[in-house]
Image (cartoon, rainbow, N blue to C red; front, side, top):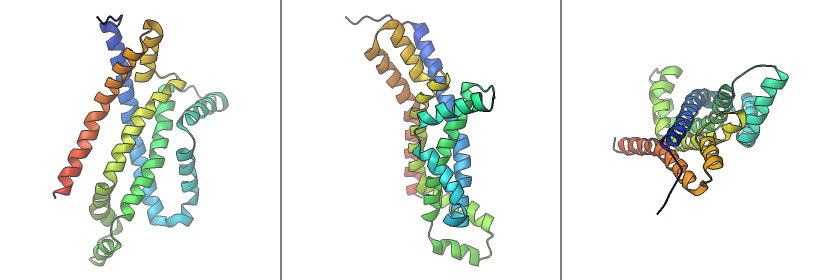
Amino acid sequence: MFDTALTTADLIFLAKGAGMTILVTAISVAIGTALGIAFGVIRVQFGAALTAPLTFVLDIFRSVPLLIQLVLANAFLGMVLKLQLSGFFVACMVLSLYTSAYCAEIVRGGIDAVPATTRRAARSLGVSWGQDMRYIVLPLATRVALPSWIGLALGVMKDSALVYVVQVTELLKSTQILITRLQEPLFLLMIGGAFYFLISFPLARFGGYLEKRWSND
């Protein structure tokens, strides 16, 4: 018969780690999406030549592994700028910028997918640039970009496991702490995986629901 030293208090500890994972992910995805939309629109509106510096910076965040970004950001802010910032703040800041770099490409691709004839027809009817973006381009681009954005949000949730390097105790770190104490790695990793599934499944299903609903419109 299977026996474990895991207690209710340990499960509560894991749940608190899962809560931290959800919080870091939600903040990072929200801020990163807002920045990504702005960056994507800027890149489309002003062209590759004028937005080359922005593109270069975004490429850095996409190219450098997230673990290195977290370590360097924490060291730079603390040791160079002498700022006493919490690990939670550093984690959210880096993950937000990391998310924005990928979201900008998703938004750019979604906007480019809107037929140019549709935009020209709108402008010929006297629609302003702002109205064109708000009522025509972004709604159509959202349908194209949604699957990629859902994948990005799920990826950020899993990548949040790396914030342990800035002393944030999220789900994976909580699991590792219990593994060290209880010496039941396989069982605890299964429970940790179940928590990750419970976090990600509703988002994936919601994305599928929206795709199905929009495809029937």
